Image (cartoon, rainbow, N blue to C red; front, side):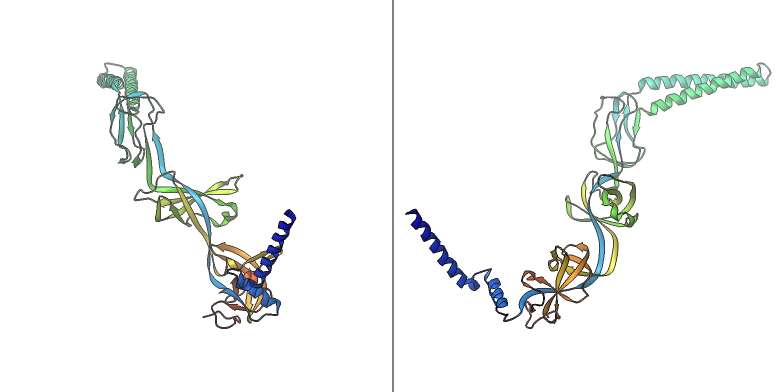
Length: 368
């Protein structure tokens, strides 16, 4: 019983295959390929329909695509040199401040008292010195005593200057102009040396760091134009200028870091953002370009099918640089020649071809 069922299945499959083979030329999608193959086997009844495009000569710009990281032109975390309690906060988060603006003051009552004492000592020493000078002129004291008084006055002035220098550490100022970040302390808090108080960033100019391969090192130099985009503002195209090329190459990646400067007057960019970077480092006029669909890769190299006198001619080509959708051909083709870009798999060397959409065989001339 089981053997009979198996024989029946085999007979059904054989009959079905035979029927499909008989109507293969009428099958959807793959029918035209069977029809053209049959025509080719019988000697051919017409040219193979293909799509074609001419070899064009254009200006080819060498570009490097990379991912960059933004950095502030200047950045610092404001901290204190001395320990103290916060007595006054003179900024708000997000403020734009000028260089030298007072941001915060620490309690300095003891230091102020020491300064007042030192100032009083200096005043008294100065009076003694001035009195000694008058007595010296009147020959009432010796010159050596006057010199001692002068030395005491110098020591008193140095003591005042030292205390005033210490006092300046209790007043925190902006080291440069920029925008403040988040405040980390509150009024009355005890601050110790190194505690972060607030961040300050100069983002009027953004530094954009990205890596380029060492093969392009000879062509990359300060002054080149950089185009960049960010996912935060997809419609915004940013322009910058290469400012510096690092002096060292990473031994792991064999890449060198390039730093560009991007104007940021509107303050849209922030430090730490990722940008897609396009660096144009060279250009060539008269480069021969063909669509990438025309290139056929084989074990011994690359070739294309050129259309000459209505027939396909296999041309071995040498490729150069690439750009989206196109490849540079450095040998094997001339400008204006037609190459097959659609139906390449159906074409054989010497086969008659016709450009799809043309009323006549493509005898080396592009269709209207």
